[in-house]
Image (cartoon, rainbow, N blue to C red; front, side):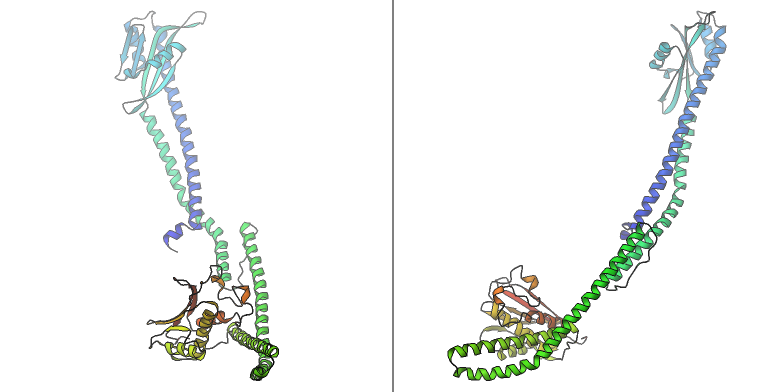
Length: 470
């Protein structure tokens, strides 16, 4: 099996599907876990930073004097530490280089909600957490009111992002670690599935090759087992049908051979009688002479039919044999036409020197069938050409009639086939072309039929020049 066909095979598809499902499942689970852990880590970090800032603000706020002065804002900023911005109306105290990252939306949210607010942003290629909270004043009765002091803290989340990237890398590594066992499991699964499939394939090939005893063992009670049982039942049915067909064909061949053989002796006697009758027919009355001529014609037709049936039975039984000899094709074709009185009715183009080994009698039968068919059913002129090459000899027989219709061409070599129902009583037996084809194949050649370019039927007989292997 080539690499490309292997990739298109069922094994490769099962392997890829199983690996994809396993790896995608492992990757999805790992990625989901990494996502959940990442969200939890960010939330925890955000909560910790917010609570730390709130605790530091809460520790300093009771010591402040309201309204605060600039020194109070500076002490509050120093207590929180880091990148921190403290504002009170028009005053502000800023520490660190990143306080400019505080957004207007965060400030608006702190003033509107009067509670700590967080916001995550990305600036300068790094993630940041912005925490904003108001400083509240608690009255003796416990009521809390905004003091107007607002504290904003900016914290770098790069460390958290690195930890999140580590979790993502772990998810990818987990999916990669799942790949080898997934491939191994896929191979095992594919093997268990494909073994019965291969056995079914081998069984089908054996059945196609003619081994009707081929069967596949049932792998179990699953769908493959049911399929195997169905294929075995089909093979059993085909075997039974083929056995019955062979018996019927053997009976039919034996019947035809027996009938032809049994008819041979009485037909020989009847032929001798008809010859005597033909000699005396000229001295008969017109009505008697017509009846005698009809009997003579039908007897000859019957003799031809029996001889053709015997020849066909020998082909079917495989007992037909060649008597090969060196034959000049042109001379053999010319002798065939001369023996039947067709030389003046046929245009022959046969250069000398086309010598080949074949059965001369069978060549005579083939040429006589083809030329006789052209003379009976075609129109003149009938042309016969003999063409020779180094490996084969071609004998073309063509007429000038209407040619072979498309619906007739596939059946022209069928036994007893006649394209026109009006020809059912013609002298031919309906076996001539079939016998010619069998003789051609017996020589290792072939016989084809088509319609010539200028019209008319054309038969081409191809015979090998070397019969040493036959």
